[in-house]
Image (tube, rainbow, N blue to C red; front, side, top):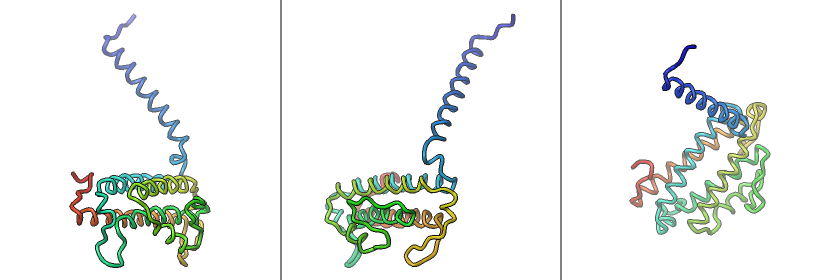
Length: 196
């Protein structure tokens, strides 16, 4: 009978365990809503996750006194930008048939209801919580998208676009306001946490 060195036997056990773990992880990932989404949505969801992490870290790093800061008359303050992000995360799901929570007062095709939400008085902690909740809502809505929705024609802000274009618009909107808040933070002496 042929024998193998003890290290070979241990290596086989380790490799088998790693394959079993990876296979189990793969099954779990296939069962998650994000993994069941079309590849384009999976990519956008990953991007949105990174943007959310940066926005959250940036808002947390901003001191309370910078929350009311604005770069000029008629321009949104730091807090207003955070509430605007939350409002649009809720509003931009409505063309996909996913209503904003009733507590927001945001209605489909009713931008004044969005403006009413984003101009609510809110502390830094309240606005940060609202933004986090809005991201959870947005992700859940995007995870429902299938290939048929991605090619469906929608009318948003009077423009025709596909479902995929809606989710790309939503993602680029978040990047726009991340850039805005980076500028606000730098203007207030705050270094974005991820930039060291």
